[in-house]
Image 1 (cartoon, rainbow, N blue to C red):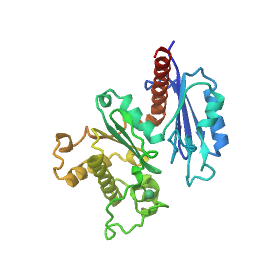
Image 2: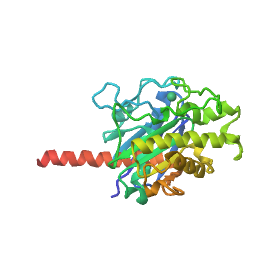
Image 3: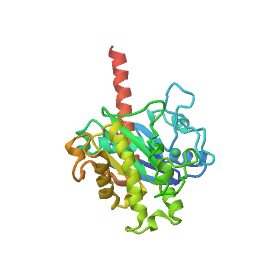
Image 4: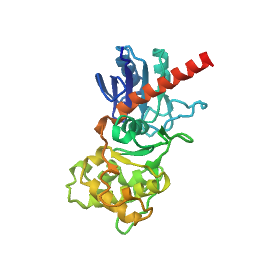
Length: 306
Ligand code: ZN
């Protein structure tokens, strides 16, 4: 019998919960508005209780405690989202289910989904995934694994060159002001131009500036992480005209160094939209659940036979 896996992508406005085989399909799905932690998580648990699942993968927004040795493991740590700081996401699922429960950051799950469920990307060893929307986050697959460190990368907050003559906007990040997220998230666009980002016409100067900040960030990532592919998702990237503009600016900023064929020309296969669309996170959460459950099962077998 085909095993079923649950995946939950928890965002600031909604939690998407889905069930499938962990290979990129969805059998059933529910969207729950993000209200209070107990109300939202109870509804998610209730949805998954309708199925006979082999494992569940949780992928909430962060910042998230991901060090298994720390008391903050599985908890959203200090978020500006009212009521959600210090919320333990894993515990209610561990209480309700006796199956493997895995957890990673939403953007890490999306990176893993794009990497592991897309045959073209699976041929690679590394991939960077950025979500550019209400916030900015990045997940990195290196040596075919999701990258963690102290907790998880926070590349959405990297510092970028800021020409205050061209762009006097001070930025909106409550911690850093004019970091990447502070300058280029959807709310930053809305604040700088005093209208919602989605209402800015394609020929508005906002988009050239936006492409420039994204290109700066990608160049920093190309030079530090050297990913074999970069996927750009999130609501802001629904403005598809950004892609050719970003690619051209990245090529210009790199100026031929490092000299790699993939980094010259149109880069149409290097800087790409998500193949899974806006399902990268929830499908990735399911794929992480499957991968995590398999690893646990192998290590149990190794313990029994070793
Ligand atoms: Zn910041």
